[in-house]
Length: 272
Image 1 (tube, helix red, strand yellow):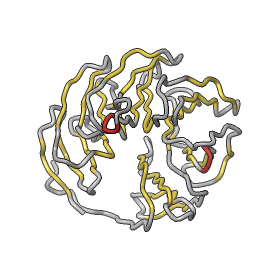
Image 2 (tube, rainbow, N blue to C red; image 1 turned 180 degrees about the vertical axis):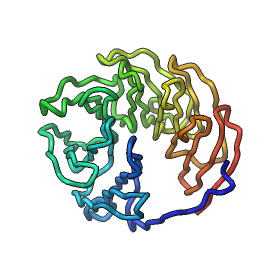
Image 3 (cartoon, rainbow, N blue to C red; image 1 turned 135 degrees about the vertical axis):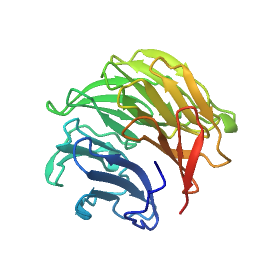
Image 4 (cartoon, rainbow, N blue to C red; image 1 turned 90 degrees about the vertical axis):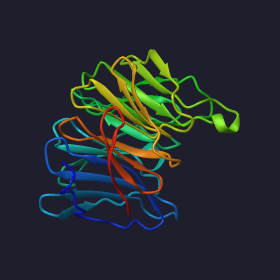
């Protein structure tokens, strides 16, 4: 199933880190967010894969990190400087910038599966109503001086997961994955990695969660450990399910992309 894979497109983002890449749920459009290390505008792109065409570059100020599509695929939210969130159409047309902002920016955002709400994370957890342009709630993560790097609503919309940085190697708090109900009540705290949890993704049916840390974790919707795989000494940064939900793609800090199955069995690796 992977023997015919080939590189379709490549970009080089000089002096920048690509923080999020998100597929549109309905259309063959890819959203790419990156932040600059040289006080230059962030790279934010919408790319039509079917047409092999960059729909639009959306320059923003230097701290653009998060991106999330609406469930319909008609709109996309981007995070810019100081946690400013802007909404665009799938064609790159500007819709509005929300009043909410966070001085420390936001590390990640996730659009609710059925409502026009955004989940946002940095040191705290924020719930934002897009239509009413209001902050609905702020949830205290309970940690001190520790960034929350990723968040994801369960497909049911009834609870969500966060993954944080942790400073266990510096004598501080460990890295945790946390399950929360929609009202911000902590349901479960999971410690299975020695380094930061950089990305989390639910399978479409909501049965399994994949998490990228120093290991590839697969958990159930109840937080039970299904798989835990250590590939090498490189920490994982990105994770995604294939459409069938039987394979996981993970990327690491060295630029490798691996294809594995739910129990961690390794199938193939792509290198830069």
